[in-house]
Length: 312
Image 1 (cartoon, one colour):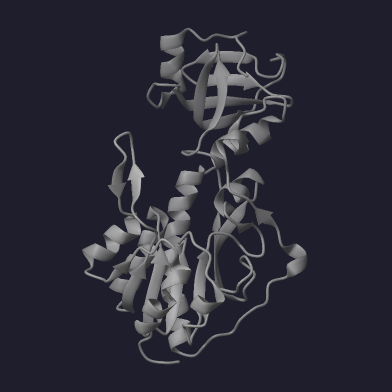
Image 2: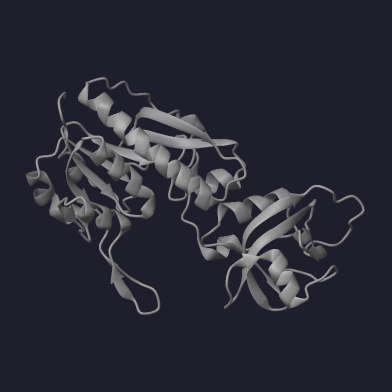
């Protein structure tokens, strides 16, 4: 260890771009970038590179988009890198890959490990109502997100949607990446084992997970809307039309509002207040099927939704 480590960076979505940029702009020796293959996007299925690939090309870095990384061990080895930093890369690393890097493979994970190991840490932290989340830099092992911890950066969850919190954590990941490399270059690596007794796991989110259950509490409905915004988006139906719901508030004054679960309490410039099994939520932003994303108040004006109507 020591000196300027040769780094391979592996990442794919927009979330992983700031960390790559920060490493480069901090003068770190990024020798190559690995990302997922180009994918067809949109109605015309245009083959589109990942945001990380575009970033790497902008800086003139060699970029590899292997379909199966495990089949390219010798090519990765020939790059002679000391460490690999991964951030939302999207492929599991095999032992052959991990062995290549003398100073380790380090992952930027978007939770306070050992909480929320797995595929949807940001959504899961919002869903569970956690007041804080953060980014953990851990040494990658074969098993899922179990490696020893190098450093942690925390932030408040607040009332942010998943999209807003992702943007915040993405910038935090960038800071963490540079700090981690500084520690490793100085040989100042003090690792903390994860407490297995506190480990929780989260799965990949599917659209079917996003249906709002108004029989549940208002807090549960509210957290689901926040956790799945902007995608895949929580949803319900009104008169047979699916509504994707992007934002909401808790309705504090439900005294005497009555109404069965799913019933509209009011629909006006404030939004659409909907009774839940316990309490109520005010939907403030939505998108009807086939329509555009809009403020709920604009939907009220155009669709004649009113108190007494039912969402399901």
